[in-house]
Amino acid sequence: MTALLEIEGITKTFGGVTAVSQCSMSIREGTVVGLIGPNGAGKSSVIDLVSGFERPNEGSIRFDGREIVGKRPDQISRMGLIRTFQTPREWRDLSVIDNVRVGRSDLERDSLWRAVTTGRKLRRLEDRETDELRDLMTHYRLDTVRNQRAVGLSGGQKRLLEFARIAAARPRLTILDEPMGGVNPVLGERIGEAIRELKRNGSTVVVVEHNLPFIERTCDEVVVMDLGTVIAQGPFAELRDNKRVVDAYLGNDDE
Amino acid sequence: MLQYWTAILSEAAIFAILAMGIDMIWGWAGDFDLSAYAYFALGVYMTIVLTIGKAHSPVTYVFGWHLYYPLAVALSVVVVVAFAAVIGAIALRSLREVYFSITTLGAVWAIYYWVENFTPLFNGYNGVYGLFDPLGSGLSYNTYHYLFFAACLIILLGVYLLVSRISTSPFGRMVRAVRDDESAASVYGRNVFWAKYRTYLFGAGLAGFSGSLFAAYIGAFNPLDWKPTEIFVLYAAILVGGRGNPKGVILGSFIVYVGFVELTRYIPSPASRPELGPALRQILIGLLIILMLKFRPTGLIPERLGGDGTEGRRSWRTLFTKSPQRDAEPDVVIGALPASGVEAS
Image 1: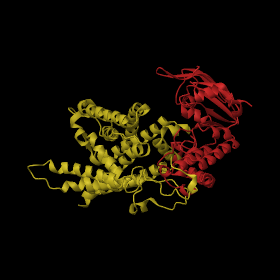
Image 2: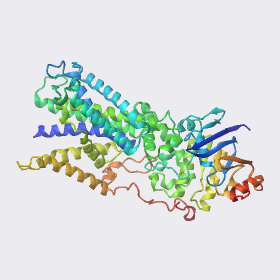
Image 3: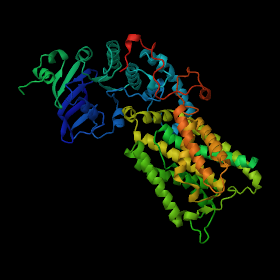
Image 4: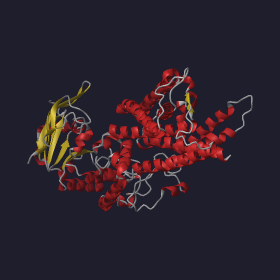
């Protein structure tokens, strides 16, 4: 299998603080990879660097073989990478189904020129998609709220809306930043299922999460970070006994 | 009396077009722009100097051409959009919210003082005048006014159809997504600056276009006719009608222009205090904004919510229903998920 995302020796400093230091990892296509590590290990910074929200001081990031350092978030996204944030980021004053429609739509359809010249054709195109999106809503248990403002959803529904939006956008790589934050166990099961569905539908998934049992159940492989760099990568079972991993989580006075 | 009303309603129709332009920038894209009045004024000035012919001393102004009115309108809009392209490029690149507003406020005052003091441009403080009967119809004064009113209504309808078509298009939806959360929009492949910039230019173009119409209505224009602070009257109109809804913005413009700006002229002011009437008008508009924000923050006709076609609610009916609160707690969450399956985070 080839690497979909390849990070090589990236470093990022904020003022005097080094958030990411000579960090390298490689994510194979078609896998679900957990990215774990103690608080401040640099997980979120790596996501920001990969998705273009921050620019590394040095190092290279290749997505699908192409260098993406220096590209804007929207350019990287159009190559097929979608990330989430630690809190759900719905478009609050759009309806739930419109949130998903924005996920499904693309630049060509969003054109101002097309809105003026071929408005009716666009509407027909969208009407044809509505049934499919309605099924998607039902699948993510959002059918009863699909025509409401997204701001009115509960925290759990907002999480599910994120997944519906991602499913509509069909990315090649999905990076989830703490999808289990503030989620109870029952909904957690549904989110685990949603991640497996993403994989079945052809997306590679990276999950940043503190909930280790969840990572163990959901991920094929785990990348462990500490102090801004990767300290281990491999199947969860192998890392359980890795001394550096245990030290990173529990602390070690010898170091 | 009839002529008085057609004049006021013509004015309201022109300002409704301006308000729709401002609403695109603020209602759709979320940028509280304060320079739109400069685009409007520039549209008025340009249309006048492009149609009235050569300046005669001591009056001085640029161009002094004698163009066919529709051509002058088109050219004015181009000039206004070019201006907005510069200001927008500076203000929208990385400034948001109050910083964006301050930048556009600076821009409008810079333009205002420039126009007022640099006489070779638009004859400075005294302004430009002389645009009557722009299409050279040769009609009588009354007939002309009625026809102008009819033309304003037809143009307003045309602009409304265009704007609402864009509003409900994928473009309109995308711009609102950018408004609600820029980072999330860029995660879904949207260039935030470009989305806002296009909306800004389109809104500015509408402002310039409404200025061109106003030029034909008023015939003369000088810095006393446009104070940049007047834009708050337009924001009041947008708030009353419904931010983000073109239909609401038109309704709000007519309510504010007819009800508050014109009818309050009848408030008697004693001869010793001639400033009382205009001051009361400002106070009433301020009060209107406060009351709307308190009791119906989404306006009379709230922003259209794009459904899947089964929601079965038309926007005009919402005039008679309770205003949806933007920050309302969820009202249908139970039943969407098993009671145990959801927990507010």
